[in-house]
Amino acid sequence: MKYPVTALAALMLGATLPGCGGSGDSPAFVPSPPAPASTRVSLAAGNYQDAAVRTMTASNTTYAYARMAVRVVDDLLNVPLETFPIFSCAGGGLKTLDLTDKNQDTSLDPGDAVRLRWDHCRENGLTTTGEVRVELTDAMQIPGGRDYTIAITVSNLEMISDTAGVPTITASLVMPVHYTRTATTDHTVIDGAAFTSGAIAGDSGAATLYLDYLQDSAAQTYSFSIRGTVNSSTLGGIIDFTTPLAFTGVIGEYPSAGNVSITGNAGSVVHLAEEGAAAADPATVLATVDANADGTLDSSIAMAWSTVVPSQLFDAFVYQLGIPIPIP
Image (cartoon, rainbow, N blue to C red; front, side, top):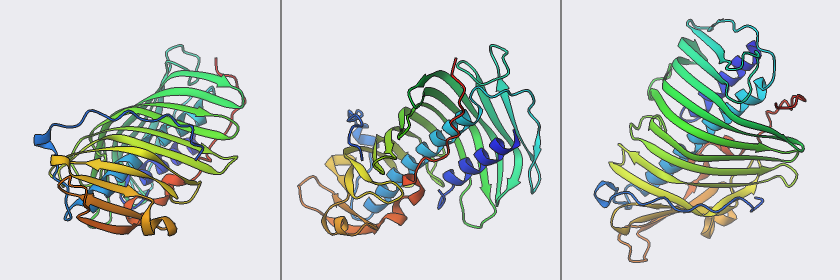
């Protein structure tokens, strides 16, 4: 059991720290109801780039937790789990894994839950304390793969970096995940991740996010759609966002098409899109803002994708053991 615990912890912590990290048949999103005008941010030339970055950062964090949970399930599903040793962390502290085994069959199957715990665990420049619970709510074997739903609960997971200036992250959230794997595709759907904290490092605001991410390994393409709301203490209020056109591209590369629309107070809107000059440059994305809803851009800039979101978001979902044991 030592290998899965170590690997999964490294994935989760690396993906949620700052700076770490199509097929066209994903369903279209219905926009969320807009936030009350009194609480929404007025988007303008001075903050529109930050709004774009925070939207993509929160989306990346959401997917990182989903991906971590899927890796937990793929590692442990229907594998005999007789003992759960306590592991000492390299720089001090402990980490543990345990199973809530409702049917007492010593394996993870529907209705069971795995808990990952860290107690002042210092490794890889991080000191971590808190708990992540991954409950397998439903699962079935399908031709060439698996289809299952997961409920993730993160309880006051605190991550303190040794690096000066890197903000401490304290994450609390609940998240339903529906994951489907076939011989050639990985499809992750998050139907309402609710963060009370930790969606964005250094920003205390809450967030609610919906995500649909399909990767097709046969075609080597992906389709990535998001919508939701971020309440940013840094921006000073709420922004809403949706994906009129899914981000698509080659797996392992930044998108070559697609856009996100971010709305604030009084009709102010930011677009982050693969269009204009950015469409010809795979390393950039165009950010624009219309601050007063008059249809005229008040500011625009071609931003480096690397300053918006880590490239790992678009990497292949390759960690799949494919354990040949039928799901009960």
